[in-house]
Amino acid sequence: MSIGALAGHFGLATHVLRHWESMGLLTPARDTAGRRRYGPADLTRVALILSAKDAGLSLEHIAVLTTATDPAKRRDVLREEAEALRSRIAAAQASLELLEGALNCDHEDFTLCPNFERMLAERVEGGAGPPPPGATPTGPAEEESLSSPSHRS
Image (cartoon, rainbow, N blue to C red):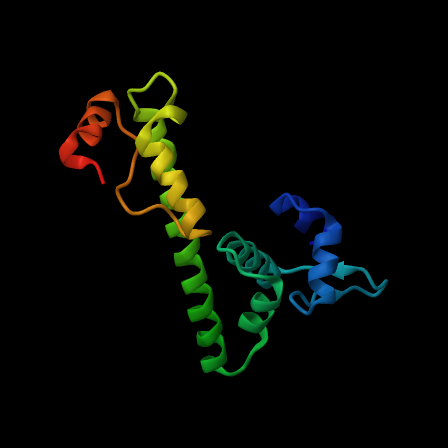
């Protein structure tokens, strides 16, 4: 298979495959004219690289996973990447909760919702941390409840 055919199969530009080759991620055979020839193992390798990239791995970590002979080193990279992925998932979940809370808010303008404002204030105070689990903007009934004397600080 030619570089163009392999690139086309995965919807990639040929320069991407050349870059991966320069990093040692791909090692295609060469024909007598020096052109790259890719076989079934190369298709599998490209699928692996793309899957790892989809999971957020850097090309450098993918190179370690695909070239390291020490299984412990590969597992260390996998542990590190799994923790990073868990963090990204948690941040994405918190962001989704914020968006869904705003969408489900009974206020005409969710940006005026006291709970939405509180979540943003907590983000300002906490920096990069996600809003607390389950925190979502609410409608006017909740706002009245929060403004009652028993809920004032």
